[in-house]
Amino acid sequence: MNIATKRVLATAAALFFFEAAWAHRQQISGAPRSPTFDVSASIEWLDTRLDLRAAERIRFTATGEIKYPADKKHPDGRSFGPGGLGRSYRDLLHDYAVTDAGHGALIARLGPTEIGQPFFVGANKEYEAPVAGRLFLGINQSLKDASAATGRFHVKIEVLDPGLSTPAASAAGGPPDEPIPAITPALLAEIPRRVSDRQGNPGDMVNILLVGTQDEVVRVFQAAGWVQVDSSLEDAVVNAIFDSLTKKDYLTLPMSTLYLFKRPQDYGFAHGEPFRVAVSRNHLRVWKSPYEVDGRPLWCIAATHDIGFEPDERNKNSVTHKIDPAIDGEREYVNATLTGTGLVAERNHTKPADPLTEGRTATGGAFHSDGCIIVLVLKNAGPPK
Image 1 (cartoon, rainbow, N blue to C red):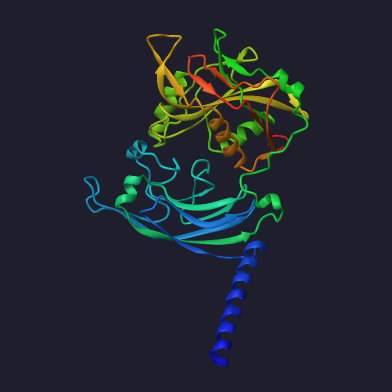
Image 2 (image 1 turned 90 degrees about the horizontal axis):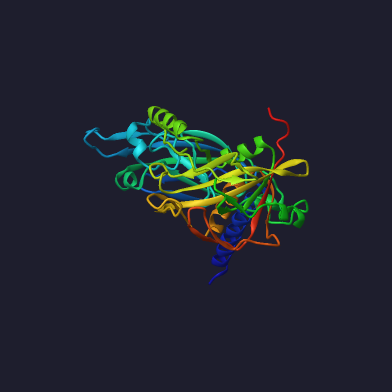
C-alpha cells in the first residue's frame, strides 16, 4: 500500500470518526436534529429509534398519501393524507389505537406497545415528552386495513427543545423506585388488605396507593388514557347512545359496587378495548381513605384485569367477569400508565407486615400476588384552576 493510499484511508477514517463523534455530541447535548421517516401503510408501528428525554419538545410535519382499495361502498377506493378519513359508524366496529382520531391518520406513541398512550399527529403537531422513552410512529387503522393499504406518509421530526439534562430525565418510565418516608409501617397497618361486596364477603386486593388531591387523581388517570366509568345502567344506556351518535367508541361500561371503609368506591376507571370492552378491560376502583400523607389525601385502589366470564358463586344461575389471577400484572400496568404521564413525583413498591399473597374475589375467582403494594405520589398541581 503506497503513501497516497494510506493518506486517503487515514483521511476517510478521521472523517468517519469525526462524524460519529459529532452525531453522538448532538444526541447527548440535545443539539437540533431533523430526522425523516417513511411510514408505510402496511405497518402497524415504526420504531424511529429516537429516545426522547423528559420535557423534550418536538414538531412533527407530515406529507404523503395512503390509499385503501375499492369495496362495495367505495368502488374507486379511498385516498387520504396524514389527517386520515372522517369517522363513520362503521369505525365503531373496529379497534383503532386512537379512538377519537380519523381512520388511517398518522399517530405516534411514546414507550412500549403495552403501556404507551398513542396520540394523534396528523399533518402537523408539536409534542412535549412527559417522561423519557422511545418514540414510535403508526397509522390509526386495523391490521386488516394495513394488509391491503398502499402508500406512505413522509414524516419530519424537528427538535424544538432538547429537554432536561439531568440523569433522571433520560431514565425511561418516570421516577425511580425509592422508599417514601411518609409511608410508614404504622400507616400501612391501617389500610385494609381487601375490599368487600355489599354482604361483607372479602374481595379484590388493595394493591395501589395514591397520594394527591381529588383533582390530581382524576387528572393523572385522564392523562394516562383511563376513562371514568358510568355509575349506573341508566347512565350507561344514555352514554352508549350518545357516543354512537357522535361516532365515538363506548368505553365507560359500569362496574359492580364494592366497599372499603364501609362505603362504595368514589371512582371507577377503565382502560378498555373498543368493541371488546364488555369482555376484556383493565379496570380499578378508587376510595379516598381517612388518612393524609404530607397534608394530601391518601387514596386506596383495587385493580384487576377482566379476561372473560365465569360462574358467579354468589348466584348459581348467573355469570360474572373472570379476572386474571396474576393480579400483580395489573398493578404494574397501572404503575406504568400513570408514571408515563409525567405526573408522578415519587413511587415505591412496599410490602406491609401482613402481606396478602392469595385469595378469592367476592364472586369466587382465585388470585395470587407477591404481597407488594405500589405507592405513587402525584406531583403537586397547586390550587385547582
